[in-house]
Length: 545
Image 1 (cartoon, rainbow, N blue to C red):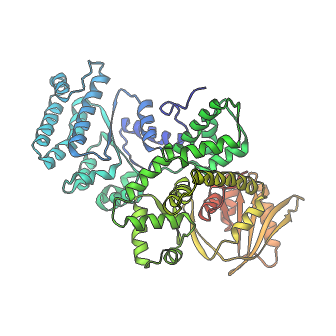
Image 2 (cartoon, rainbow, N blue to C red; image 1 turned 45 degrees about the vertical axis):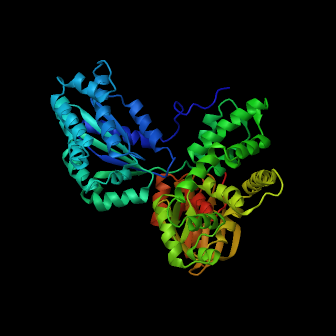
Image 3 (tube, one colour; image 1 turned 120 degrees about the vertical axis):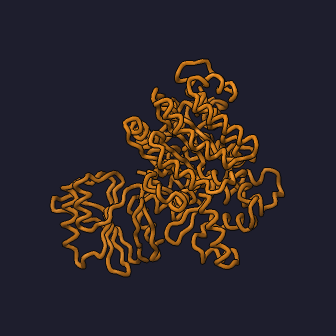
């Protein structure tokens, strides 16, 4: 049985990859649309860009990939110039060189202007004249495209780190060049979406409309299931365990890949043809609890990076409180005994770094597994003295077993029960679900019912009294079609009193006609992703079909 090969088992993101390919092909046809790929750390941005490069080996397009994280200007300039010249040699099937001087010698006759610029950049950099070198560097793509007649796709990974080069007006100067370089497509990626959006809108304001913003989120439930199947191909695992892993990892491809790798190893060690709950528990212990487990170590490094800054103790306490379910500023103030201004300032820093997200007045640790690790591993290490060897490990394993059992119990509940339980948690808060804002009343008298359409079909509903009057939630596991929706709308109109608000919840899909009709009738439409977004906000397991 082979371990997962991360380099050659790219999965998902097909729609995003297709968009990136389209932008590259558009550049060849004279149409340029720059792209900003935004998503939190380890969500798969770099893998996606590298996949693009590997699949788009077009003769007329040169890719230059630049990783800016933890780099100084000299490295950046050297990587930029060497990559451009090296790729030209490769495309022309010429003998390859890696030393910059040898690259310049090899191409001096073919690309004299380009080589002249490269040598000027190297000279300025070696004498510490970084501003001059930066200006020359930004002119390089235009000179190269003019001299070769080819196009360039310039990729800046962790784009926001350009500001660490301490070059005056580093983004403004870049913006001027982007405006004029018609044969150079810029793709930027960032693990600090909020910060990068601010750079694009404030420091590159003239270009903001020229950058297509593509957010990269964790996989949804069905995509996470697909990645598990992909990784565990040929290995048996029950649906319940697969669903649990999809929920437990929060849909993060990195965690799914690492956990599946550990499952494969353990199934081989114990000679198991099928993965059962004890192996899942052991795999989670190995990678999440063990201090040298790969995910545990990854989280330790994240904590260390956050606590090298000011207010380290407050950061740790704040993350611990968020992991414990304290999601409002008022709850955090009470829990931490601090002033609202102190907490808000630190939360803003965590939001800027992509660790914490805000939805309405609720603040969450965006990474579900990171939150779980903080609550059940990191906080216990800080506050619990292990008087007995192995006690913490035993407690963690018991907690994982409980989480597995609880997930199974919740998953077996009827959809109407799950949604009714969720509605009990609403308290006149506003939330954004998949880009649309909803205000959810504080409800009472929440009742699951069944209604019958004129055709004789029954459908599940929930009625609840809110401040505005009666709310009606229609629940559908199957796709909603136009004819069926018409029947549902007719029954809603017969109700007395008439609902102040009606919501159609479907775990599958709406056909376009049904969606348009629902919008005309001013019905809210929630799909599986929106419903599970609410489940996440209230720390509930996801809905399993």
